[in-house]
Each structure stands twice: as structure tokens, then as C-alpha cells.
Image (spheres, one colour):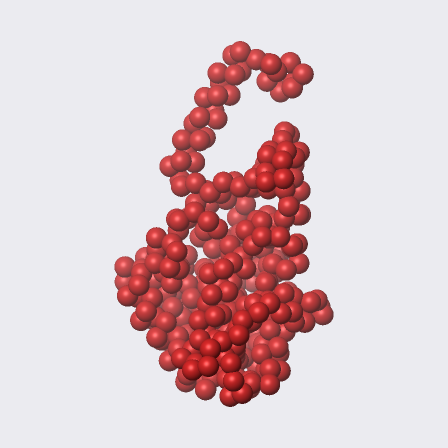
Length: 94
Length: 247
């Protein structure tokens, strides 16, 4: 790929990294060369505390099929959850 | 191969805008006169694999330096810093050229320098190597290993990379070696055809080597795309090219 294309999503929530939990600000999503995974290309998600700083990151590098399964799982979980909870208002989520 | 071994260490040099840039430097032991090579890392950052390429050059008798091009994006592990660089749109071309000049000057100033300096880059670094061949005439040779987006469409240009390197080809004064896999998707074989056509039309000194059954990054021994036969042949071309232009 060799591109600098990054899809960015604003986040509200927390992530847990090597130094414990931290508030999330953004998720950066891209399909390109991974750092660690033994793949030529991977779907990479960086959940970050601050996009301008290297500390505070939860990273995953997964293959394309895994990423598609993840998207489906998230959508199913949201659909199921929506039926049982009120989404969008953390005060009512339990 | 150097007979007396190599020395490798972290150093700093003065890069673009006078900034101090960290780098991994490797050089042969001894008081001979050696050519220099600037090793440009790929998009995943200033990682172990690229530093080991600097070591490889030192092993074969070159003073090598691998600058941390993401130096300004913060301190931390290479993968965390590369993530910041990516989210920010990557290394700006002008800043890269300033850093590459600084690395070249560092090598020329070494007491064991023979005065000749080449550059080699991989992936996004291949594109940057092509850019350097066009914009830094003081270099003596440039190697582009599968640089993507040397040719770019209008929508692929960004604030950090505002001009496709191919558009600077008329300015190229440095001999260029290109190494490409015919199964690569960036650059595609068609991209390589077009690049070669433009180099030829412009009358530039270049050599392209293209390998079947090889894709992107086929030198990388720790990735499934590694192709040992093609990589061995291509490395031989790199050293032959540098011997011709840097000895």
C-alpha cells in the first residue's frame, strides 16, 4: 500500500495499555504494512489517548478476514445491545 | 566483506531546520576510506529490520547511517512513534530532504569517508529515495526499492507530500537503481513501466531490475513476502551499482 491513508474516528471511552487504563480520544484505522504481524498487509487499529503523542496506545494488527468478522461482530453486538439497553447515554447503560 | 568487523551505535546529526536527528550508524573498523550510504526506513518506522540493513552495509565496507525520520513525532518505541507519524499524514517531503542532506553531510564528514554517498530506501523510503535523486544532486547514487506513489494521482497528494516525485524527474542528476517485484500492488508493474518510460524520455541514468514471483518488500526476511532467491539476486545488483558509483 505505502499510503498514508488513515480513517479516524472520535472515541469516547477507555482503553487499557501497558500502563493501565486511559481515556480514549481517537481510533486510527488503516490497511497497510503492519509493524509486528507476519503479514504483508494488515488492518490496523490504533486506539489512542492523544493522536499527537506516542504514549497511550492500544494497537491491533489483524488480517482482512478477521477485520470483516470483527465488523460483523460489532454490528451484531450493537443490534443486540440496542434491543436490551438504551444506547448513547452511558448513564442508562447497565 | 570487512576484515576487521564493524562498529554500530546511536548518533545524532543535524537535519532539516537545524534539528538534531537521532540515527543508527554503522561503519567498518579501520582507517580505510569507505563510501557512505543513507538508509531510509519504511513506513512502519525506524525499526530493527532497517537498522540491520545499515549493519549489512557496514559489513560489506560502507559507512551507513539510518536516520530516525520520525524523530519529531516523539520518543518511544518505533511502532508507537510510527503510529503518530501515520496519523499526522506522514513525513513531509521538504523535511525529509533536509534530513537526508544532513545525513549525507554526516557521512562525508567521517574521517573514513571516501567522499561518495549513496541513498537507499524501502517502501515509502523508496519514494523518498527517488525524490532525493531528483532534489539532492550532491548524492552519488540512489536506490529505490519498490517505492509506492512515485507516480501519484491528484487525490493522493497531500499537504505533506504535495508533489509526485515523478514530476521532478527532469531535475534528476543522480544515477538511479530501481528494484521491483512484479506482483507488487504499489507500485504496480504498470507504474514501473510508466516511471521507466519517463526516465528514458528524459535521458536519465537509471537501471531497473524487476523480479517475477515477488511482491512488495521481498527483502524482508521476517515477512511472508520474503523471496530469498530474488532478494539475493537483487542485493547483488545493489552492491554492484554502488561499487560502480561510490567506489
